[in-house]
Image (cartoon, rainbow over all chains, first blue to last red; front, side):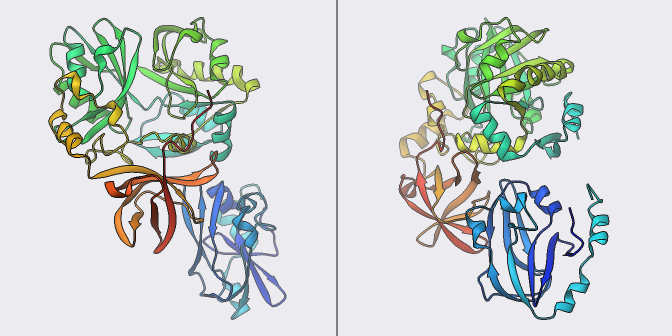
Length: 128
Length: 362
């Protein structure tokens, strides 16, 4: 439920290092809490992100939530498929439900995020 | 926070519980979209025991009801009902409710949960030569909604549901072996369906029997989340969002409930004048043309000028569109008018459309 190769933010985003890039999405805990994601407002490619500042908005049928950048840097790719199939954020949050790919300013920043065991404690280790 | 007699059922089913109007209520079980679809295609069961029931009985019952509501109860036969706002002298809406004539000199008013104490006081104050009694603590209330509702309920009651037409009520029915229930053909989803009143502590028995018997028809429990998206697709007003004490039935799309010709009632003078002059603002429905979801409180603009604000908005799970309602200046209320919705500082396009967003076939 919370893969060991990811880092986790206090706002329930995950970050995965892929070579020199960082892929970002929301955790299964966040996806379940939102339920029925119907819209994601994505940043533009080229947008500058600051650590734990809002970079987009995710909406379920009922609720609106900000998305927070788990790393500073530049957006190099956004998951445009989410425009037509936002529900993959619920069904596959760590795979097809990824949100943005970032060229990090300082990949060392990821060390400020939680590890999987730490995050499991925060969310109550539900189903871990 | 208060709980209905079905609280243990909701908790056991794993429902997500939230505070609503002072009550701890289920917002969703399996998920809003799934529950919404079940109601449109099969059936959904809602716990609405938090709603209020007020009875007016006595020689002056009809005259009191007529004074309190804007619609005309004078035409109601015993066993018939209607929907109506009740207004302040200003024309502002105290609450919206359903009224049933349950006896020669007896009426049952079903009101919103969060406004029940206010309604009880208002109704008692304006009842003369009759007694108004708050029976909210005695009645549990379930809503069974969807195309399979009739089939599911008929298996559990000897009452002849085929003879029960829209807004009619059976006042002494047996449901799932529970005596002295009422069954009305009413709802808040845009589907055919029933609301079933039963003694407060018997609600779990009726709930269990319906879910058990209706499982093969696709019946599922439904929370307040889908109740809101269903009613919004059907363009039913939500008190406190779309209508309140600062809005009148003529500004809302409820002019059909204002019967000026029936005689005196509270708010009549102001509403008669507003009708003659035309309301300055109107509640309209709109669909988003840009990808974005309107929410309560977002400003509505025409040519960069603010014309009003969103009162309700969502992504409609069945119509599969972002939809909303809100008040706009009369000149902007015509279907086809282009609106801008201010969403987090950016303007997203929308188009005024005719209500409702969803209407069932047949």
